[in-house]
Length: 150
Image 1: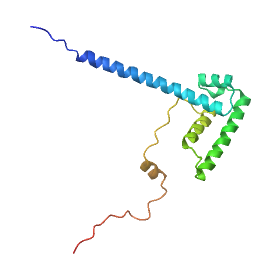
Image 2: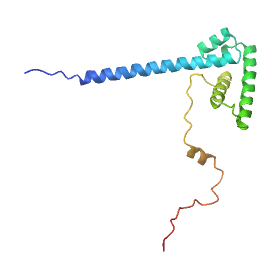
Image 3: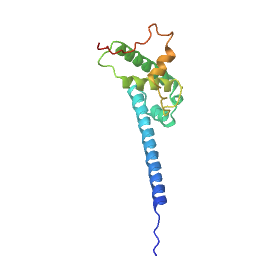
């Protein structure tokens, strides 16, 4: 009688290891992209190479020299003001992704949190509407009634 080897535990272990490895590579690539995004934003706002590389490597806005940091904050505030005006006017030049990136940069410059920190989930619209509603609705909701045919 021949014995059959059961390879299912080995296959399951290999699949799990492959999944873990792929997820680790995805997280590493995401961190690299996030650092690159921060570096490009800082470059766009005119921060010098040396200060930019130090700040991005340590993920801390405190590594930017004080004079340059103040100039950078002023430029970011001006950009946020411009983006807010474009959004209010519904200007076709408005870009919500740019607005989000500049808002993240402003929070990072103020020292609120790390650039690598993920955004929190926004939650459902219904929960936000219920939370911000001041009073009970004036009219009850209408129920659809089918007309009777005779």
